[in-house]
Image 1 (cartoon, helix red, strand yellow):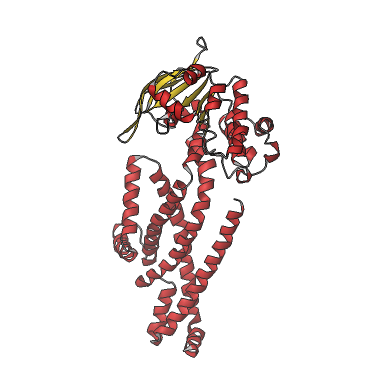
Image 2: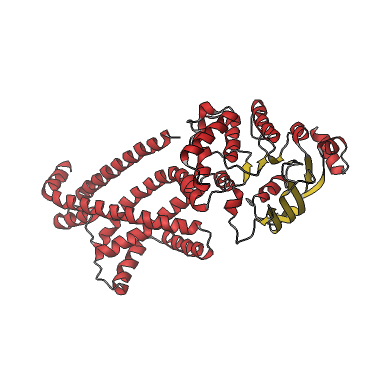
Length: 246
Length: 220
């Protein structure tokens, strides 16, 4: 892991909403092929940090480098680079006016100029992988939460991203649907995808992560391998948090 | 009373029919141009370009914050003075009606676009969609469902507001009322006739809109 290439590098990141400082001078690197979980109490800035990685939130200061390119640089086309940074949201955000298949093919045909037929073949393959092939002509209103989230994941995959950011992907799901979504993410981990995931599923974070970051009050307070962080936390805040959730 | 109304209709039906034609024409032109101009204003307002935002906010603020009758007088007096063309009273009033309605249309469209869930924008951006594609393929198709019903109500209001043109003797239904009233001194029967025509008109429009709305919702 240490020798692999830097994919995302964040430098001195600051973010405020009004007077509220949400992120305080964060510097962090995500390497190619790495699976990084971000945990911490709510309001600690986890989601904001994740959303800064593809510039859905604009940092007040600091830099976000994706493959060495500063995403905030006005001279670059940020849309181009976002195509290579997939994102999966807590509330799925599937497109309700498009069918399941169209949800997946829209971005590749529009932005990667992939011929419609080829995009559809690829979409069918992806749907098959997550067990949604029989739903391909349905509209998302007909899907359960777990199915919507699986759709959202393959929609991101269709752009063939270098990394996928997961923002609490199971927090809005009914308990019986959490597993089906986690299984899909697990399969992605096994395929070698680079993943950054904000999650409250401690068991999952422990199982799949190469590295776990613990955030509190807008800072990465402690980080390490799942074993170090969960079994031998050093910072009092980490200890306090883990004692509450584990 | 009913006899008087029927007699009045028998004798002056052509005046009312001409008035109805005038009203329909005024309403159609107003709806058409107000929709086009209103859309442009809404897009300017949403563009996040500072100067566009300020100008359109002022435009909408003034037009929605002052009486429409005042605006009609204003343009009726002002336009002939500043225009290089020879503008008829009717043209001035039509322009004023369009400008007034465009502000309301702009607000309806802006609200409809902003009502689309923010998550949709974020998902589109995260996929790397350009702003144009995001608007065209994600936001507008969903906004249309918010906009059309509200816009329909706005159109019905516009139909009724064309009656203000009678103040300037532009040919339309309320002017027909005034014409017949001054020829016969029968005010209330003439008002009832015009009222019934307006009611028929708005009822047909309302029915049409609700059928249309149901169609839209069927695709949800």
